Length: 336
Image (tube, rainbow, N blue to C red; front, side, top):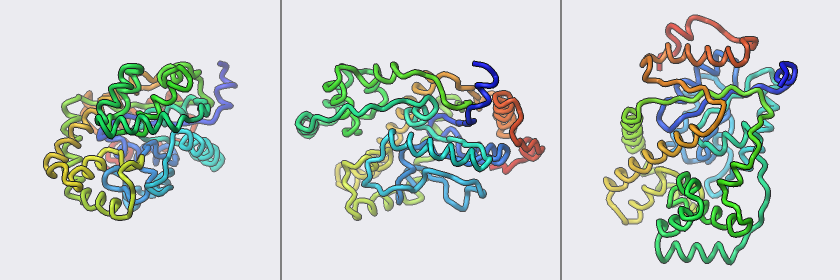
């Protein structure tokens, strides 16, 4: 690719990493320094009324930074990767036209990657009788048994999907039945070329330290009222089969509210499931190309890590954006 071809593409900054690694904290300083608007790359923060369980940053803590794709639909809406991709494309155009830098921040790997590399989603149709057959199978033998069917034909997709995400497990099996190709094969067949001049930064840290942060976050969610948040959604008539209610923190608390387990057991299950989710996120991102990784344990200092991230962005974008090289971003910042 020539330099002219590269410069003709809109720029897109992306920050990825596993849950609880600290993306939100870094994103605010990065957005201020690079004149950016943030696009949430989280498949659950789109839902209104689901704030605590999705670790949604409150409006008053966004420090004046514009955030997109947060609170855009009701919890009974089946938000999809294709809808995310379409909305994201439009936002990137709008933000760029305003002279700002589009900045995706999130941990939903497929969603982020679909935008970065312009995945094509073909409508393979549906097989309603087969869907119903699989749902009956899950009801009779359990979600794990249904998940095992997917594991047999498509281990990679099974590794990305939790057994309780029944709707997506069924869809993966349905796609294979209709096309003869697994979802993994279809993803691998996508051309990994980008319509954007990309800068993707990935955050990582020691696994045990990350797991400790996960557990501390979940304890904080319980203190903040996660149980009450889930109870309110249930009382509002949101079915537990909804995509939103299959999210981490919601399905486990529903099990407690329905009397299937104690609150202590639900929290233990949530911590375990979130640790597993973080592991799956890291596995997904490790297979993505173009990511510049920043090990947050290497320096163990927020501002030095931030400076490293700024240097990566300046190198990728050749430093010719409106970059505020104010020393406050390196020697003080917001210190959160």
